[in-house]
Length: 270
Image (cartoon, rainbow, N blue to C red; front, side, top):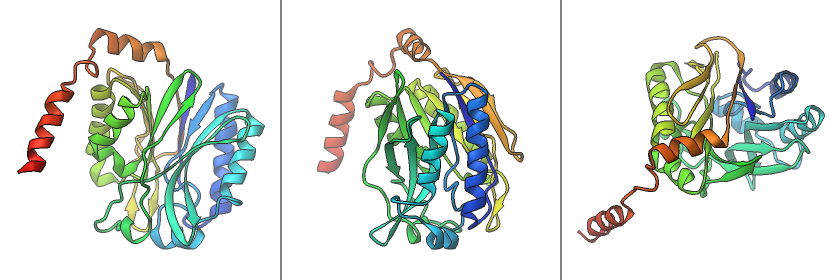
């Protein structure tokens, strides 16, 4: 399957402009022969706490409806980071929309960056479940930004059958090395493809590091974007490549679950 990553710069609080840009990149990806395109975190509002709280949308209208229409028009899967307002709570969400416009999956960010200058815990309500979705012949695990720092998340998704990890992010420049290292580590340790979409530009004094990429199950970068420019990068991912890597080195099969469970039991009993 040929997929695309849309590395874009969003305008803070200008949902209409951001949706117009998303539409353009969806169309470009489809015209390039891609079956799926991934967008960064909070692509509707831009990544700014006060603006997210002000412009977060209920999912019976707004940005999700526009993206569903674009997916139908371009006959493409769209995975996009969006805000969600539900029961007076704001969630940081990754939406998966099919070529027929159906919402196939919704993942609410579970790990919130509760430190300066982000303080996501003051903006969002955390989700309480990890999510996978079937697209084509592969299982895709969904992650958002800070989730990347928790190896338990990607390992759980891999053990649930994920062959691709999707990461939608607003990752800042000071931690560019962490971005590159952790993406490769998650791909290698779980023997999965990783499709990571990041912002470029600046929101509320935070400069994003771009560097969106597609990495294969052996940790090799298939395609990557620059640190500062908008881009549409593309690459092919195949289930057979995941199967080949896992067969050559059966890491997941050779896990000592009995040992890990025993160690956890003793720790909790101390």
